[in-house]
Amino acid sequence: QVQLVESGGGLVQAGGSLRLSCAASRSRFSINAMGWYRQAPGKQRELVAIITSGGSTTNYADSVKGRFTISRDNAKNTVYLQMNSLKPEDTAVYYCYAKVILTAYWGQGTQVTVSS
View 1 (cartoon, rainbow, N blue to C red):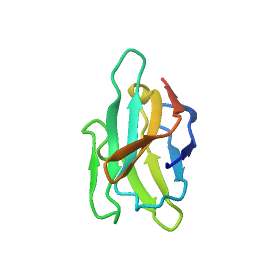
View 2: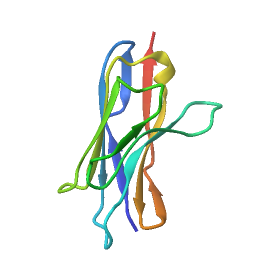
View 3: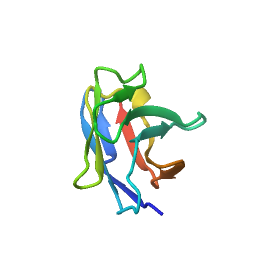
View 4: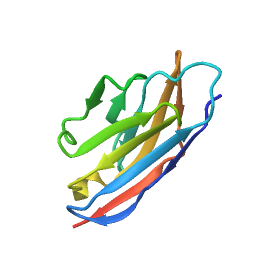
């Protein structure tokens, strides 16, 4: 079992920045990909950004490219999401994600609200 604890959500004005963090508990097996998904009211959960175990490969949703940056610190089992130039349409609950072998784990979610 891997537990994910998110922090860093909140309320920000449009154009502002937030940094999300997600710390994973120690796992018997190596954590492969880690990332962030989000779910806005009435919408399906969508991928925001994902990063491989070595940090060499990242993938972003088109809607956040150039504004968000994902990174990870393997020594701390932590993944970060730096969000700049936030827009009202970025408002959602953001969920941390980790994949261990074939199992996906999810955090409890953190609310990000961007006011116009």
